[in-house]
Each structure stands twice: as C-alpha cells, then as structure tokens.
Image 1 (cartoon, rainbow, N blue to C red):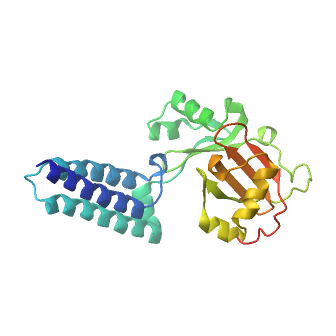
Image 2 (cartoon, helix red, strand yellow):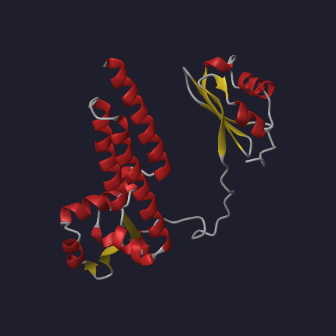
Image 3 (cartoon, rainbow, N blue to C red):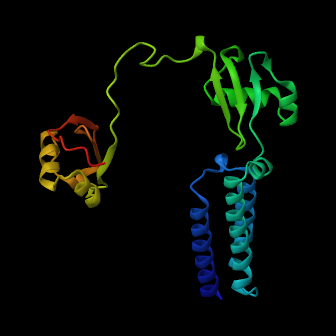
Length: 240
C-alpha cells in the first residue's frame, strides 16, 4: 500500500508539473481568469488519485489531461479571436483618468478606494494627484501612467548618452564551472583562476557565484567574505 501511494504520487506530480510547464511560465498573479480556474481545478484533481488507491490511476489522469487539452484550446482561441479573448479574459478597465477616479469602473470591478490605494502603493505611487491614468489589467495587475511632473527622468530627457546595458552569464555556481557558459564565452578555467587570484581568491570551490558580461565585467561572490566586482581583460563578449 505504501509503495503504491508513493508511486501514484510521483506519477501525478510529474504529470501535473509537465502540464503546468506546457501551460506557460506565469506566476499566479499574471494568469488570466480561465488559466487560474483550470490550474486550481487541476491541482485539486491531482490530490484524488494520489491518496485514493481504490480509484484506478487512469481515472485520475484522464480528467487532468482533459482540462489541459481544454486549456490549450481556449488559449488558441484567445490568440486567434478578439471576441474569444474578450469573453475569456475580459478587457482592461481605466480606473483613474485625467478627471480623477472612475467610480463606475471601481463598482464594476467590485473594488473600493482602499483596494485602489493598495494597488497604487504597490506600483510606487502614494498620492492620487501623481497619477494621470491607472488601468486595471485583465490579470488583476494595475498599470500606472504618472503625470509628467511626477514621471522619473531618463537619459533622453537629460540629453545624455548612456552605454548600452550588458547581459551577464553565470560561469561559476556553488564552486563549479558552468561548462556550457564557459564555452559560450570562449574562455577557459585558467582565465577564471587568473582573475580570481588577481582578486585575492585562490580556489574556485570557495566561490558561490561568478558572472561575466559581454564587456568583461566580472562579479565574484565568495562563500565567505565580501563580493568583488572587477573589469577583466576579456573582450570577446559578442557570443550571447
């Protein structure tokens, strides 16, 4: 009996894990309503065949696969049809406009002022007078467009020229080389050891994390002690 429960649990776990991966890497707060409903039902269905050994395993798998297929069909419809997308997902609602708070929109969303203020604070705005537009998205998140006077300045506003950002990759994690990334960067272990020694570290195994970006900037986080950021002689970062 015990081994049966363990085996059924493992099978259902990997089945649900695989299906959720196929459904997309969304967080709960980013799911559309129909996605959240299907995910919750699948999670509930998965617990039944795990514990009910009298129930044939296939009777637990079929409903899960059915809902996963339904999710695929609904997702396809939402991508192909604007009408289906509107029915399944709803549509964004403007809750704040230049005239102020839209009371009818809040009522339609079953929200109150406290709910709105909480969402605004979560977006970094504590005063209503700073907001030009606030839009409640279909996944339950609030998008805020601030008034010009309260919008953060950027390099273009200040007519400054900024160097483009550079993407770092992990070349050492938990004291071990990430071979695929080392190969991608076209470096070798000797290069890494040389840079470590120049930074005062003797052994790769003592390092928790090393990243290297396309401009040769290396970040070193030892298992003990202070992190180090240094510019290396690396200049071949055009591979990723």
